[in-house]
Image 1 (cartoon, rainbow, N blue to C red):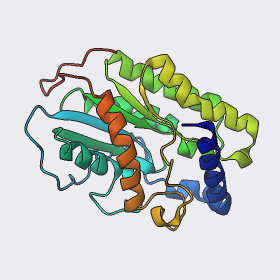
Image 2: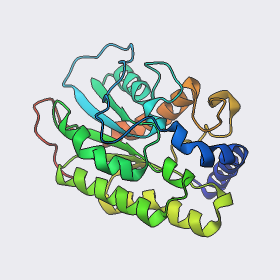
Image 3: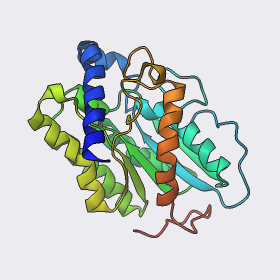
Image 4: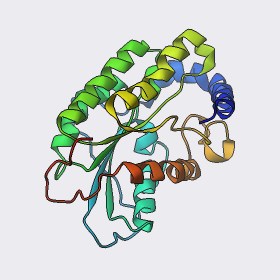
Length: 252
């Protein structure tokens, strides 16, 4: 993303969060609907696009409320939207929704192995999107980075390719915090050779037509906008020649 465009995105993000940040910082725990000690369903309703012919491509969408479909109807989550676009493009994709509202990177770190072990087979790709609740709770960026590293190490050990969907800190948290937090995803994408979608709410945050009334989570139209932009990154990251036989794809 060009620097000028990134500045516009950050300005809109800051404006949106300044309106709701007191509610978020006080009520963040109330958004959480999970206890990581309790198993959670790994997928919701499949989007109504029939699977095309060809080997199934299994994708795990592992994240927080932005993945889970917070405030949306069944079938409207980001996992559903990406799956529908991949299938429309002729890719027999099954995207498992392992998004949990309220999850921090620490909570995701605790449940990642469980989620992977409970899939039918090793996934062809993992979409990894956590960090939003870390910044709302003002968790140390170093702790966020360490948790992301632990999850990427687990996926590297299992030889599973990854696409990171990044998060941005609102500027009102200060330039020093923002610099430490915002660099995490690009740094780790370079270090681990993953795909990268730099800011998951790019083009959506700050637009009332694309956001729920809380101004933090995208509505169904906003999820569609994200999926339109994210799906090409997913297609590029899918390993060539992987299939449903249960063997891990080649490391990249």
